[in-house]
Image (cartoon, rainbow, N blue to C red; front, top):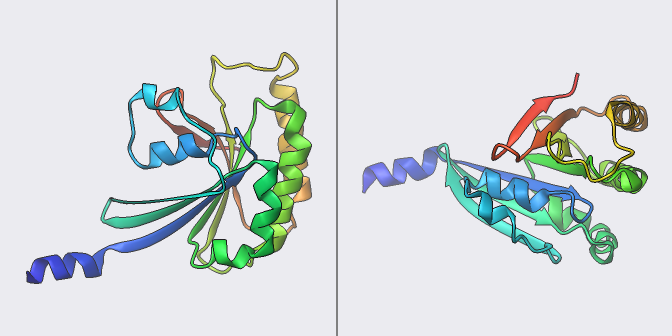
Length: 182
């Protein structure tokens, strides 16, 4: 009895909020964070309608992942009471579908609206995942390294100078992979 009480006391509670446009890959990332490894689980994903909150335990921590659906119908709704969604957040992950060249500007516009709406305090992380950086996926023939590099420069040029963030290329091609963008 005493050890289970001690276990509960030592577990850290972590809240992560996943944001981004629809079809950016937020739910796939959530599944990876939950430890789902069966590739078939990623083939039949349905769009998140509104808010989906998942709770699970891993690495001696309790996670609460808030997946905010990215359909246009929900985006404005989140900002009506944004503090309700982000209260107690330890980490923000903003996901951009790197394959969706035609929506780069919309994704960037929404990201800036998110950044301007949150009050980042010490210890709260903000990560940008350039997602679907999969070697075998090319949905748009206009996509190449120059287009991606230009977009990364645009992201960096748009974010307020003193805003602390990390930028990653992510993939679920081999379940999930992320690497820092230099």
